[in-house]
Length: 196
Image 1 (cartoon, rainbow, N blue to C red):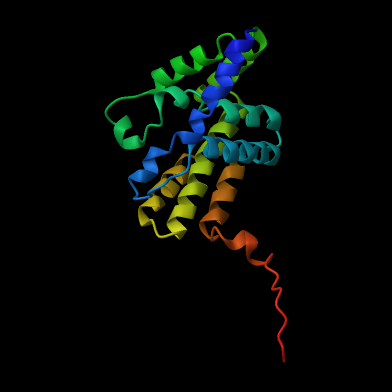
Image 2: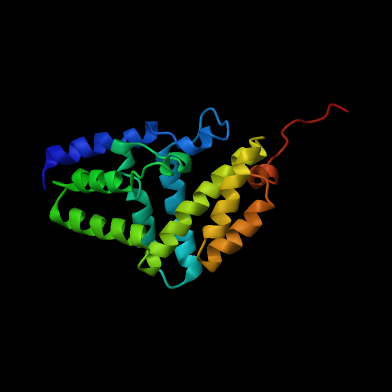
Protein backbone atom coordinates (compact mmCIF):
# COMPACT_ATOMS: atom_id res chain seq x y z
CA UNK A 1 0.00 0.00 0.00
CA UNK A 2 1.50 3.29 -1.17
CA UNK A 3 0.33 6.27 0.92
CA UNK A 4 1.44 8.83 -1.68
CA UNK A 5 -0.55 6.92 -4.33
CA UNK A 6 -3.60 6.97 -2.02
CA UNK A 7 -3.27 10.74 -1.54
CA UNK A 8 -2.99 11.31 -5.29
CA UNK A 9 -5.94 9.00 -5.93
CA UNK A 10 -8.14 10.92 -3.48
CA UNK A 11 -7.19 14.19 -5.24
CA UNK A 12 -7.96 12.56 -8.60
CA UNK A 13 -11.45 11.69 -7.43
CA UNK A 14 -12.25 15.41 -7.34
CA UNK A 15 -12.24 15.30 -11.15
CA UNK A 16 -15.55 13.46 -10.90
CA UNK A 17 -17.04 16.59 -9.30
CA UNK A 18 -15.95 18.57 -12.38
CA UNK A 19 -16.95 16.00 -15.00
CA UNK A 20 -20.46 16.74 -16.32
CA UNK A 21 -22.83 14.14 -17.70
CA UNK A 22 -22.49 15.10 -21.34
CA UNK A 23 -25.60 13.36 -22.66
CA UNK A 24 -27.94 15.89 -21.10
CA UNK A 25 -26.18 18.64 -23.07
CA UNK A 26 -27.91 17.13 -26.11
CA UNK A 27 -31.25 17.85 -24.42
CA UNK A 28 -30.25 21.49 -23.97
CA UNK A 29 -29.41 21.31 -20.27
CA UNK A 30 -26.83 24.04 -19.76
CA UNK A 31 -25.33 22.79 -16.50
CA UNK A 32 -25.99 19.04 -16.21
CA UNK A 33 -25.24 16.97 -13.12
CA UNK A 34 -21.72 15.74 -12.46
CA UNK A 35 -20.46 12.18 -12.45
CA UNK A 36 -19.84 12.49 -8.69
CA UNK A 37 -23.43 13.61 -8.06
CA UNK A 38 -24.67 10.73 -10.16
CA UNK A 39 -22.51 8.18 -8.33
CA UNK A 40 -23.67 9.28 -4.88
CA UNK A 41 -27.38 9.03 -5.66
CA UNK A 42 -26.87 5.82 -7.66
CA UNK A 43 -25.14 4.22 -4.64
CA UNK A 44 -28.09 5.05 -2.43
CA UNK A 45 -30.57 3.82 -5.04
CA UNK A 46 -28.50 0.63 -5.33
CA UNK A 47 -28.65 0.04 -1.59
CA UNK A 48 -32.44 0.51 -1.61
CA UNK A 49 -32.92 -1.76 -4.65
CA UNK A 50 -30.81 -4.50 -3.07
CA UNK A 51 -32.95 -4.40 0.07
CA UNK A 52 -36.15 -4.41 -2.00
CA UNK A 53 -34.93 -7.37 -4.06
CA UNK A 54 -34.12 -9.29 -0.88
CA UNK A 55 -31.41 -11.51 -2.35
CA UNK A 56 -28.61 -9.02 -2.99
CA UNK A 57 -26.06 -7.57 -0.59
CA UNK A 58 -26.89 -3.85 -0.25
CA UNK A 59 -23.44 -2.84 1.03
CA UNK A 60 -21.78 -4.57 -1.91
CA UNK A 61 -24.12 -2.90 -4.40
CA UNK A 62 -23.56 0.53 -2.85
CA UNK A 63 -19.80 -0.05 -2.96
CA UNK A 64 -20.02 -1.00 -6.65
CA UNK A 65 -21.90 2.19 -7.37
CA UNK A 66 -19.43 4.40 -5.53
CA UNK A 67 -16.56 3.19 -7.75
CA UNK A 68 -18.29 2.30 -11.03
CA UNK A 69 -17.48 5.56 -12.81
CA UNK A 70 -14.03 6.28 -11.32
CA UNK A 71 -12.35 5.76 -14.69
CA UNK A 72 -14.29 8.74 -16.04
CA UNK A 73 -12.01 10.98 -13.97
CA UNK A 74 -9.43 10.22 -16.67
CA UNK A 75 -11.40 9.47 -19.83
CA UNK A 76 -14.46 11.68 -19.33
CA UNK A 77 -18.14 10.90 -19.77
CA UNK A 78 -19.37 9.62 -23.11
CA UNK A 79 -22.93 10.12 -24.33
CA UNK A 80 -24.73 7.59 -26.50
CA UNK A 81 -24.39 9.56 -29.73
CA UNK A 82 -20.58 9.56 -29.55
CA UNK A 83 -20.72 5.89 -28.48
CA UNK A 84 -22.24 5.20 -31.89
CA UNK A 85 -18.85 6.02 -33.41
CA UNK A 86 -16.40 4.72 -30.84
CA UNK A 87 -16.47 3.05 -27.45
CA UNK A 88 -14.55 4.33 -24.49
CA UNK A 89 -15.36 1.20 -22.46
CA UNK A 90 -11.87 -0.26 -22.80
CA UNK A 91 -10.30 3.09 -21.97
CA UNK A 92 -12.44 3.44 -18.88
CA UNK A 93 -11.58 -0.11 -17.80
CA UNK A 94 -7.86 0.54 -18.31
CA UNK A 95 -8.06 3.87 -16.45
CA UNK A 96 -9.86 2.20 -13.54
CA UNK A 97 -7.26 -0.57 -13.41
CA UNK A 98 -4.38 1.92 -13.38
CA UNK A 99 -6.09 4.13 -10.79
CA UNK A 100 -6.28 1.37 -8.19
CA UNK A 101 -2.69 0.17 -8.61
CA UNK A 102 -0.81 0.96 -5.42
CA UNK A 103 -3.92 1.30 -3.25
CA UNK A 104 -3.15 -2.04 -1.68
CA UNK A 105 -3.84 -5.64 -2.64
CA UNK A 106 -7.12 -5.84 -0.71
CA UNK A 107 -8.58 -2.75 -2.41
CA UNK A 108 -7.24 -3.71 -5.84
CA UNK A 109 -8.72 -7.21 -5.64
CA UNK A 110 -12.10 -6.19 -4.22
CA UNK A 111 -12.62 -3.18 -6.47
CA UNK A 112 -11.62 -5.12 -9.59
CA UNK A 113 -14.14 -7.80 -8.62
CA UNK A 114 -16.85 -5.18 -8.07
CA UNK A 115 -16.05 -3.36 -11.32
CA UNK A 116 -16.26 -6.58 -13.34
CA UNK A 117 -19.48 -7.72 -11.64
CA UNK A 118 -21.04 -4.37 -12.47
CA UNK A 119 -19.83 -4.42 -16.08
CA UNK A 120 -20.70 -8.09 -16.73
CA UNK A 121 -23.88 -8.24 -14.62
CA UNK A 122 -22.97 -11.85 -13.78
CA UNK A 123 -24.15 -11.67 -10.15
CA UNK A 124 -27.35 -10.46 -8.56
CA UNK A 125 -25.42 -7.50 -7.14
CA UNK A 126 -24.13 -6.63 -10.62
CA UNK A 127 -27.67 -6.68 -12.04
CA UNK A 128 -29.01 -4.55 -9.18
CA UNK A 129 -26.09 -2.12 -9.50
CA UNK A 130 -26.67 -1.63 -13.23
CA UNK A 131 -30.37 -1.03 -12.61
CA UNK A 132 -29.44 1.52 -9.94
CA UNK A 133 -27.15 3.27 -12.42
CA UNK A 134 -29.86 3.45 -15.06
CA UNK A 135 -32.54 4.39 -12.56
CA UNK A 136 -30.49 7.32 -11.29
CA UNK A 137 -30.19 8.60 -14.85
CA UNK A 138 -33.97 8.28 -15.25
CA UNK A 139 -34.55 10.26 -12.06
CA UNK A 140 -32.18 12.97 -13.30
CA UNK A 141 -33.95 13.00 -16.65
CA UNK A 142 -37.32 13.35 -14.89
CA UNK A 143 -36.04 16.38 -13.00
CA UNK A 144 -34.91 17.95 -16.27
CA UNK A 145 -38.20 17.00 -17.95
CA UNK A 146 -40.17 18.69 -15.17
CA UNK A 147 -38.02 21.81 -15.69
CA UNK A 148 -39.02 21.91 -19.35
CA UNK A 149 -36.31 19.92 -21.14
CA UNK A 150 -38.73 17.79 -23.16
CA UNK A 151 -36.00 15.73 -24.85
CA UNK A 152 -35.14 14.24 -21.46
CA UNK A 153 -38.14 11.92 -21.89
CA UNK A 154 -35.92 9.83 -24.18
CA UNK A 155 -33.66 8.85 -21.24
CA UNK A 156 -36.67 7.76 -19.18
CA UNK A 157 -38.06 5.68 -22.06
CA UNK A 158 -34.72 3.96 -22.70
CA UNK A 159 -34.09 3.22 -19.02
CA UNK A 160 -37.56 1.77 -18.60
CA UNK A 161 -36.88 -0.71 -21.41
CA UNK A 162 -33.48 -1.68 -19.96
CA UNK A 163 -34.38 -2.36 -16.32
CA UNK A 164 -34.09 -5.98 -15.16
CA UNK A 165 -35.23 -6.06 -11.52
CA UNK A 166 -38.86 -5.96 -10.43
CA UNK A 167 -38.01 -3.38 -7.78
CA UNK A 168 -36.54 -0.95 -10.30
CA UNK A 169 -39.55 -1.44 -12.58
CA UNK A 170 -41.91 -0.58 -9.71
CA UNK A 171 -39.90 2.52 -8.83
CA UNK A 172 -39.76 3.91 -12.37
CA UNK A 173 -43.48 3.39 -12.85
CA UNK A 174 -44.26 5.58 -9.84
CA UNK A 175 -41.47 8.03 -10.65
CA UNK A 176 -42.96 8.80 -14.06
CA UNK A 177 -46.16 10.08 -12.40
CA UNK A 178 -44.37 12.07 -9.68
CA UNK A 179 -43.20 15.66 -9.96
CA UNK A 180 -39.62 16.01 -8.79
CA UNK A 181 -40.72 18.66 -6.27
CA UNK A 182 -43.46 16.54 -4.66
CA UNK A 183 -41.14 15.42 -1.84
CA UNK A 184 -41.22 18.77 -0.06
CA UNK A 185 -44.81 19.93 -0.65
CA UNK A 186 -46.21 18.45 2.57
CA UNK A 187 -43.19 19.67 4.54
CA UNK A 188 -43.83 23.38 4.01
CA UNK A 189 -44.89 25.22 7.11
CA UNK A 190 -46.10 28.77 6.78
CA UNK A 191 -44.57 30.95 9.50
CA UNK A 192 -46.50 34.18 9.11
CA UNK A 193 -49.39 35.31 11.31
CA UNK A 194 -52.25 37.30 9.89
CA UNK A 195 -52.82 40.62 11.62
CA UNK A 196 -56.64 40.37 11.51
